[in-house]
Image 1 (spheres, rainbow, N blue to C red):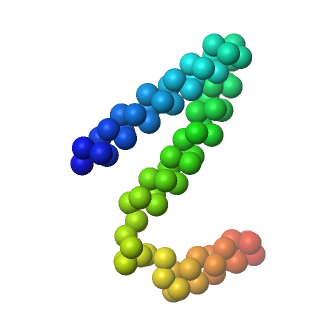
Image 2: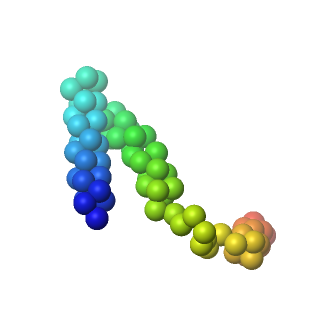
Length: 77
């Protein structure tokens, strides 16, 4: 629980620092937002991989088949 709390505190601080970097270096908060968003996306991927279970999963063959069928139905409409 402590690790999650520290990571939850470090990520926003790091992202705010990246926004500030974009503002100072390029005189644009939009550039800072872009840098922070680009840095945040891999953080989410790493967090998802760290939280997953090694044995149990919701991505069974049946669930993937249902998702592919939903995608085909959405493409037909």
